[in-house]
Image (cartoon, rainbow over all chains, first blue to last red; front, side):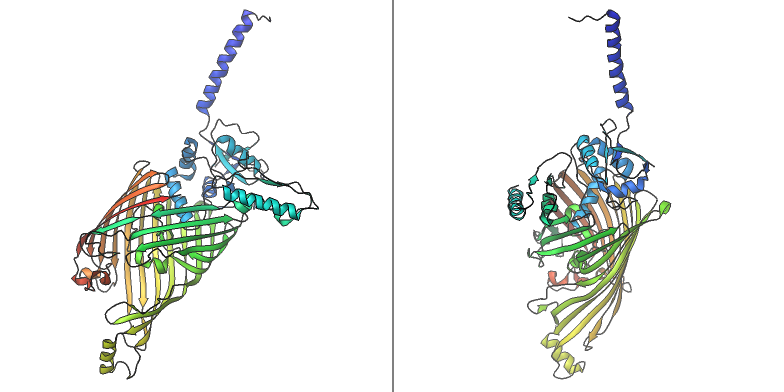
Length: 150
Length: 438
């Protein structure tokens, strides 16, 4: 049976505690959401908030290089979506829903697809070159590129 | 689901028949990770063939994933006096205030979409649930600043004209009737023709959305001569042209936008004088002897509306002011030609109080003739309050009350052909409507 010394056990204990504390700290201080795009997109470090809002309202349909924008949403019940709507679209999710009802029934457009989780949004963004989405600040991003909002 | 499965099988069989030399297999993967189509359908199709036919190059999801939306809106209307929008509203109320619609849209490529909506309604003596296409179009969105749409397209007039027939898309049951008169839906909801549109960014100054269109309004000709008053009947009716546009300025102030809409069109009709009226005109020498009584009645019209809307989180304020310029051209001159300027305006406030309750209040004013502003028939003041209950994401219920002062928006034909000036000038409209939609 392998044996470990008291000092090693103490170190392991504190390391564990520190890990828990640091993850709690990270979760506490993580941004409410991060905006992500496909890594194959041209080198863009940040996006104008108004452009981002237009992209998610489908008023802007193309990236600066002409690639089609494929926005993707989280469910309406998502707190991450609520924060994104308030901070980027400057509307509540209810107001956004009302906007889409007007678009749908006037034949103008349909809302972006809604995916059920951060993981699904990341997978979608990685699978589509022009895709853009947002996920919670603690989501695993794989190699999706994070965009700064300007 | 069985529909999609059947389609998939059909395509697989067809692909197998057409790919005997390329050993192609099309696989469908419902719910595959990372591939999601709108409407909840997740489908992926892959081909392992090196030489792909057109069918093989198409993904099954491309062929099958349509976006479908629909609504059913039964309603009820009651007035304290004056029948309004439907017969018998002042006598027990009327359920003849309902509509139903279903639309289908599909993106063929990133730039190309098509869609159509089938719609039916009953509103008093109009509708009777005869279904028609509200809109159908092919839309090519080439760049953000330029898109082209052809078909039957809803008219951008003011802020809300395109959604007047969809209860779920606005808070009040009746949008302010001074601008969005429900009687005008047959004529001013959509046009058949073409439209250019786009979004132009001006940096810190904001964005400008524009739409310009031209076409005509195809109307179903009356199958029989239709009396529109005691002295004249409608024989035929059409709108040979309609053209116009709208610009919307999304200002740098978040949630604030202004718009200006301009529209020109002409209503052409053939009218038939009633025999008694015809004899009277003959006796007075207004028409030659032997005149059949059939005459042309044209109304060239120019309409404009200025709009402002401010949305701040759950608060929304909107106001619009409009003038309509209507000229009549009569040939032969059995009636005097006229020129009328109408004035229409409203202010509206709504607030999302909770996730399920949204109150709305507006004041609306309509002058059918700006040179004549006195007497109850010369104006329509409308003070409205609405409670919208969103029971869940697919079901809503609305209650609404209007205090009306004036009779300018009342139809004489629903009130025993009484002159509007003789109807009750202060009256109340009560409405209830529920909508199921997705």
